[in-house]
Length: 121
Image 1 (tube, rainbow, N blue to C red):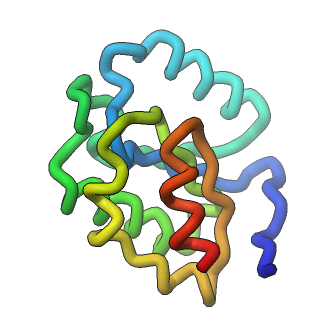
Image 2: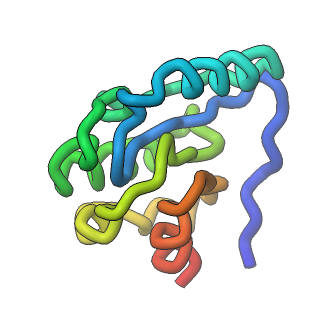
């Protein structure tokens, strides 16, 4: 098993919405970001995170945004902004190959289950 480097203050957490956006939960989402920033983490959000639809964007866009964070050398961890029922639609558009050279933590509620299997295998 390849383990990414553990996060430290000053590292960047990339946030994407591989299923739903957080538009209907902005207050609690922003409160969570405040806690991460207080712990001295930098945040990088993809464009679809704050959308309020059940699908934050079309499947291709969601896959590209996830891949964008995996490929970004400044991002140390990828966090799913929210769970949802539509993760599997974006998996064909996600580029997991970059994890071999640049492993990153992938975290969140619900969605990472579907992301971690292809990332691990």
